[in-house]
Image (cartoon, rainbow, N blue to C red; front, side, top):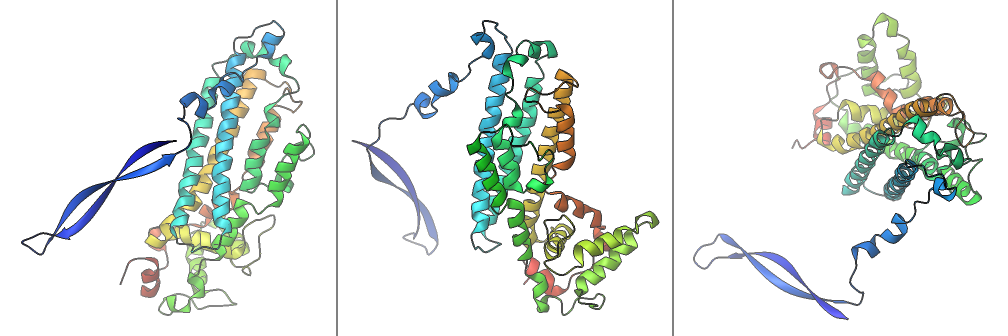
Length: 382
């Protein structure tokens, strides 16, 4: 056992001797911490012996050394480590959103911060493809056949990320074989994630809790169209503003607008995950994001779109790299290679319902003017 002295700085305001103003003085206190653990060493803490000795080249096992196999292994190990971190961040955000909380609390900022971290990690994953592309098709052929049937298709962590974000089994491409090459315990993890409440479902519940349209006092001085057929006066007014913004070729969007926003609160569009109430809340956040109380909610929605965009860019870059390296040949795991990746790219948009809301935006200067009560509710007006 040994002692560590920790210096803590305490800043104290106290009155000076000859005047009533206060002077800031700094005091230092010494705190003794008893530590029973041994000194931590960098290599031990990171378990570098395990990590740096985890690259076993199949080509070396067969005495057919292929130089670029080392790069191939390191790149994919790095991917899996980053996937682990992304899962860690998603799990933490899901845990927060599961708790009953004030939706305008500091916890919302924590969620946004962790989603933004995920976006930055995904950007790194995209750029790692630049390193992979330093390997030529002939370099890959030196060891490719030695890897069968191993394949990136067996990355259970990536499939778990998709499931936790909100990609349901019924929306997956290649449903019949997407877990066929995984080990039983890995399939169980993915299936468990699919049956838990996903991030997308939690976001739907969060949006449905937006209170502004359930507070009549916010709308008593709103100058808009009358409430008809149970449609809130704001949405009746906004629908008309939206109608006036459409070109003749776009008039079909009006029926689409009604289907998404003007249904009963809990009704979801066909194959949709967001309810009409949640869609209205998300659109309202996008329209009036300049107000202080809507800034963090907007950032949260925007971070989800960023995650989807980076996943799509990664899939596209992966598909392009595969086409460049192996052309039209099958993947080592037996998939259709480039064609499978293209189909997944087209189908696996998780937050597409949030993304489509941009179809219903209008110019700022044409937005319905909110009532003074509503402006006060959304801002810092006294």
